[in-house]
Length: 521
Ligand code: SIN
Ligand code: CO
Image (tube, rainbow, N blue to C red; front, side):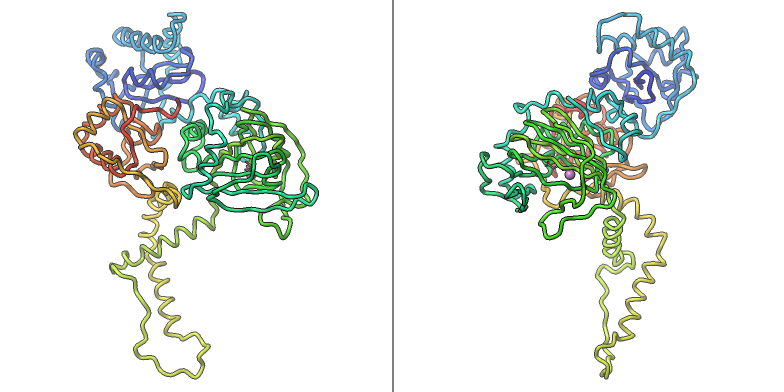
């Protein structure tokens, strides 16, 4: 079943299962949701009566790899079924106007152009971001602002209350741990602005009564549920581009100074108030002799005071300077923008590792010169050494097909690689595989916050590895939702191959048996 979100091309593609549907449509108005039945799968064209018979047991129908979705023609056989589905949708959302959903079907009937669902359903990414971008839809934001110009959103995250967030004391505890990256930036002398930077872990931080300092703690989404949840709201941008949530605490006057970042950032004010000056910095110059990059000869063109829940989007290359007006916390949702240099050096490093295997040798080759003659020119690079090095590069170069065939695999491994300091905690007393499946069917499963699961057409990548299993529909759903509901788990975990893989992720601590929380929650 596909629930089409009215008026837009976004879709919630899901299995024909009402429980799941109920969860996925949470947050939509009923008139935003319609029903499209996959014609190929239910076979309306060929077997309308048979379909009618099969529908009551539809939980067992599997969309499998069939991607072609057509708006169903409403016939005398399908009308009652559609009405039944519509009722279910309606009950799941609201009790208002019982005719509305049916009308929606008629609209769908009139607009009978067949639609094709892409390989990658976009349900969660397109789900409502509820004021996160102010008046703008995700599409408008992406067209007008993303990577182009800043956007200020007042009350973007109104529930951003200190009580449900990460209080400063807890942030300081993280800053004291060597499992997270933290920095302390302080200034002395308002006029001279002498900056200092120290790197954590910090046993002690300056007194909160002292002005002009800030502590910044990276990767909070990996350790704090609230931060993980906020990050999920930004999944209208692909995971491969998302980086982390950094939380900073500053006393009045504190900040990291005017600077530019090479990546996009959403600056969400959590508690207290901060004044942001922003302005283009097309050819940034830095103040010399400082331990951090502070823009020189840069003036903000716009100034905004942000209070709790307000958010400022700053594209890469825009100067920004946030000064705490009082003790405040700011959450930065940061993105990854790999540079050519970074990517090529990672890939070439990987190629070097691979080259020993490609030539069939399990060990690395090493230059040898048993016939070395005495040299009268010790500073000259010997020709035999140069020749061998040339040969190694030539052998690598001529093996182009093999190299390109492995490139997509490397891209996925590289992009799904957790940061160096991330370690997973395998379950202390693991369930047997049978018990795991039972638990999963009762409670659902969810990826650990730290797990990075990505896919392309041919590969599934988990935490820097290409998984042996192909990314079929169920696994793509897991990667997109980061969870399976109990009913999804029950249905999917009858497949032995998938069960074996999922169980191995559970044993590695990459996945949890838990009441599944869809990331749109
Ligand atoms: C801060 O939180 O003080 C700095 C965030 C940023 O500029 O990216
Ligand atoms: Co910045």
